[in-house]
Image (cartoon, helix red, strand yellow):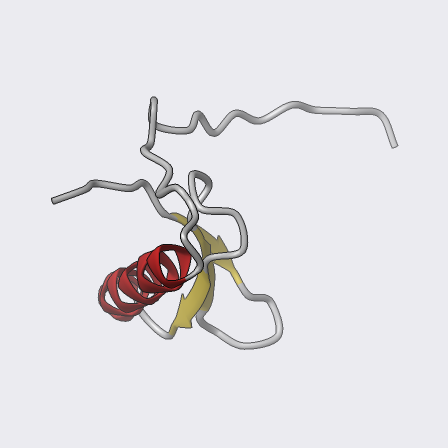
Length: 75
């Protein structure tokens, strides 16, 4: 069993969210609600790992949860 952090970014064009998995580059999902995002991310992660295994590639572990910070700039 593995645990991965997911990042939900609001989609301004479609009232849902885009989901990424920082520890698994290229693993993405989307959802209309947070609950949908969790379900869809879980499926995307499982599929992504299956593809890595099929290709004989290493399955990355998440070393530490990502940090989300904000910075303010003069623009």
